[in-house]
Length: 261
Image (cartoon, rainbow, N blue to C red; front, side, top):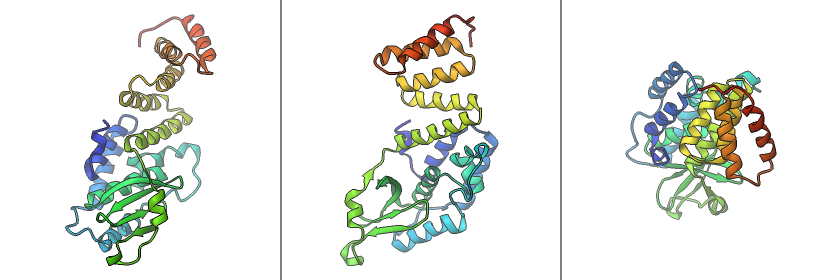
């Protein structure tokens, strides 16, 4: 999966939508794919100029009208803008989703783009040449540039020095964790379980993900699975402060009739 997440543009977006389909509606996913194809750049630019970049960023916000949520969201609405499919269909996205969509949009237009952090905020970084970079704030569409002397003023050298690279698989895992939390808040436990199961496939053996799966298994009355995951966590993290509670849950669940699931 980590190597697959190195794909670019449309291929990356389709992969992320395919993953998301494990915990959302397949019809919504298909609609999002068709919607994206109808509005996103159809081909890569032959000349990767500042003017071309400005045109595509402008199209993302003005023509496609992607925005962060325009009003405070009720809890039953909160998971929606964290879904790529919802964001594409409704043009309303959590900032973490917005940055993924802008990244895929610019990559599809042919720009060498990735995600970086600056002062704790995520930015899309576009490299126009070896010496020229542009940083786009996905929340507002505003940007700053580092230009070579022959092309104009050199700006944001401090930003260039302070920018930190972002591991994309880790970024995606954080987005999926957010989706899981909001699905749980909505009582959608089966869908939340699908998210945790996917995270475990990407990071097998992670004791904290096993503990999360154990908690969800207990909520879903899958007691034998919960016991197994709790015991794994206790064995792997013997000094964790939550172990006394985990051991208590193991004892309690072991007293229940055990069904095969």
